[in-house]
Length: 273
Image: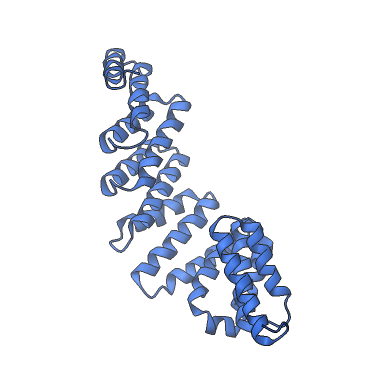
């Protein structure tokens, strides 16, 4: 292929775009950014390739917490009529990433306004859940936990929420209640999640991790409740043995010595090695 022709330039640009997408999928974000930058340095590429590279680089900047750079790239894309026309399907995602970037630089009002506008204009129930999730994440990053409860509660109550959105909302609710010093509601959110999403690995792992946090902070009653829930719901879970051991420890440390000894004996029979 003759170098320097428009077709060759276009092919090369899209090759860099594809390679950059692949690197991003592998988690090699800095190298992916380099690929997008290579495309943007090429003055011969067409407008659509330039928009694709700039949007991708802006998204990568947001992913790698280079929020100022992300804002510059994403705001530019969203300001261009041809981007909005030719990449209509990316507008919502670009706004979400822009809102999270605003959070990263402390531009709280703009973050909330951007995500709220997306929510207000959501054409379907599925998209409404997506933007409720975005607002929940924004408020979590802003440490506005009452707002996290407000929006997270809407997600878990919505029939249109998919399992992943609901699982993340339960996690956000549990964390928010914990930060609001309402440990009973924090635990209740995880218990409800375990009942409604019994096969979800994120909830399974979160219950064990939260139990360990309680254990490490010497809240043996709270930890014991969570370890027992793990034992009850996840008998094939990879942390079942650990949960069984720590549950007996929690019983002992919380003053239930006889129950703790009985639980430990059961554990030793089950795991003799």
